[in-house]
Image: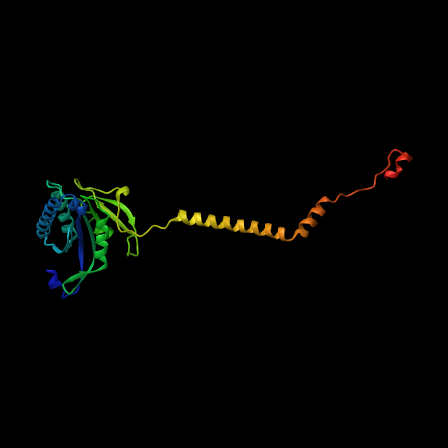
Length: 252
């Protein structure tokens, strides 16, 4: 169904696919002709493969695209075919992210938080990769034609709960390692900084206490003198004359 017709129904559950050409801006800056050829190749192949499974390209955003599918299986099969084709000469460095969720059609446009999530997932990828959310994984985990690897849970900007992300690992597909995963994530809380600030606060408190005691003693010298006097007292006890010597009796 065309999304213009769907706008009358306003909302539906869909398989959301985001794709873009990684590093397109850099390619454009170094070789504009090459960049335009890659873009045309990308758009041509995308349309052919999406049409084969009766999906729909909703929008093209320069070097990126938003597509919708009614079937998770068809979306994944389409994605695999896309990546295998893009690896042929001329190579087009495309990354793909897929999520299942609600989309809202309004005034010939499309909205929805799940669209943003699909975009976040796609942004984590590398050229040649297909990344999916857990709800996509749960739909096809028992399908032998697909192989997966969990990349872990991630906290995306403007998304409340952490999300587990999976990569398709079928032959010919790229899988990002933890070291090269980038994306639009929430800023991590710096626990080391918190500990450092706590230690600084304790040291500062102790320093203030020591300085305060020092100032108090300096401003009250009589207390210091009294303490010194008490410390210098010596107890003198009478001697016992054990030799019966009258000449030493005066010591007793």
